[in-house]
Structure formats: C-alpha cells, structure tokens
Length: 350
Image 1 (cartoon, rainbow, N blue to C red):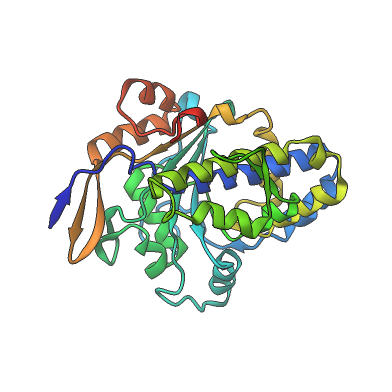
Image 2: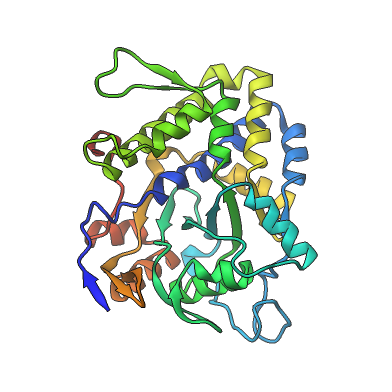
C-alpha cells in the first residue's frame, strides 16, 4: 500500500459544490409554496419516485438491511434533528434506480454514485451542515470486505448503502435522497440562463444550461486546473441561488413552475419521506439562509493505493468526534475548536 499526505486544498472536494443543488431544491420548493403555487408543488412532490428501504427498521423486524441494529436516534436537545443521506448520480439514474428497486432488476455495478453527502439539519431548524464523504473512502462493507465506500450502492443497492454509511458515521440516516446531477443543466435553462462574472470579462455573461455545464467542467485550460474549476462551480451555484430568489423568478408563474418541475424531476427519495413529511420538512427550513449552512468534508488522514486503486484513508479518530458532534447538534462548536476542512467564504475561494 502506498500512502501520500493530501493537501488541505485538495480535500475541498467537488462534491460540496454539487451539494448546493440539493439545498437549491429545498429552497425552490419553499419559494414556490410561498409564492402561491402550493397545489402544483403538491402534485410534483407526489410524482417523485420513492424507494422502499424500510428505514424505520430496528432489531427484531425483517428488513432489506438484514440482521442489523441501526444507530439510535438523537436524544435530549438534539431530538428532532434530521440526517439525510444524499447520493449524487448521473444520466437520469435517480428515477432508474427507483424503478429497478421496484422491479427487482437490480444488477450489481449498474448504478454508481460519484458524490456522497450527509445533510444534517439541527433540531431547532436554525442551522444545516453538509458533510461530504469522499467516494474513495476505504471502509468495511458488509458481505464485501474492505472497499471504496461508493461500492456499497453499486454492489448491494441503496439498502446496503444506507447500512454502510450508518456504520461508518454512527448516525441514523432518517432519509435517503438520490440526486441526478444532469438536473443542473435543466435547472439553469428553466431559469432562463445564469449570469456569470469571471476575471477578465467585461460585464456579466449569460450562460444557458449547456454553456454553464461546460463552464464548470473545464479544467485543462485553467491555470490551476481542478482548483479553478471548483471556484467556477462556486460562482455558478451562487448565481443560481440569486436567480432563484429574484423577483424575476418568484413573480413569473411560468418560470416558477418550470423550476419546480425541473427540481422535483431530478430526485428519488425513500418511501418514508412522504408528501406530508417532505412538505413539513421543506416549510421548517424556510428561515435557513446560505449563511446558516456549513460545508465540510470528513477528515482525511492520507491518500493511498491499495490493490492497484487510488483510495482515501479517513482519519477515523477525528471523524468519530465530528459525527458525535452532529448527533448532539454541537457541530458548530466542534468546527470552531478543531482543524476541520470547511468551505471558505466566496471571496476567499481561489
């Protein structure tokens, strides 16, 4: 096994910027409800594909998770906090995964997740934290031995994926959401494009969905490669948020409904995230703003190679502390007193 020490900057993964699309989905649903399109929102929520994972399982009941006792829910002042496991996929797989589960056609290796995040919402609904888990994290997967963590969903499906992440974090995952990142392009188009200001440009440039996708994917022509590409994604995410909350969107019924259609068409959720539960959760988040969301990455000890493949070696000691702080709703205190890889303010992103 070969091990190299990762830089702080390299640990600032692309996943955190993709994760912002998840928050944009929730924000969009809130805005649409407030703007008076609640009936349409309800219809669209009903159309979201559901996955039967039996996430309410505990010891003593039959479950796709098998003979496995799940972590206990948070107690005390943290009771009522919510953990949502998020898997990012490409090429319309959010609906396909739900269909394959319903039909029993799950084929190992047919679906992959390039992004893994845990969205933690505090019990008082004043804060949210998005914790990215590197997809190459080297962890034990029941029935498969040691492997990259994203192999859990590829080989065993969503139920094994939930189980693996619960074992890895020690947290109960209240819900599971699959997000199709191709929805990024469609979301941009539904908003009529997005205005981007970049170094060297004279004024803002409006990009359509395809142009925005090319903008955030390009790295070879940039001076710092992946690092500059991450900045571009931050730039686009910020611009999308501003457009979604602008009067141009909120007071344009056609634009608003198209935005909701695009957002709800890009996800699949567990069947315990019912229409009513989703509405309650969305409404409870109405006061959370971007400044109330902390983006961070699971602590990493080193990068390495095992059996010929690149892997991420997690710092388990620091990670246990981070996840304990999530369970007790004390993550902000943990971040302020520990060396944790957090996303810097927009003006500090290279």
